[in-house]
Amino acid sequence: MRDVALSGMILEVLKKISAIGDKNTFGFSSGICGKGGQSVRVSDGGPYIRIDNTIVGGLN
Image (tube, rainbow, N blue to C red; front, side, top):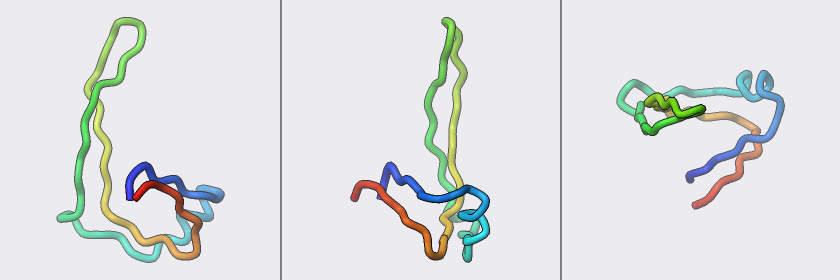
């Protein structure tokens, strides 16, 4: 899936994490964020996680 959205209160969702992937599943994507003529390189990423009993929406 991509463009995933989770439904729920964030603290309740975090409590439902039942598994976290190892460092080999960590990936980065990068881009540029800017405002007022200034820009900075940004990235995001994280391990795969399993969240129990949570509604997930996204694209296949």
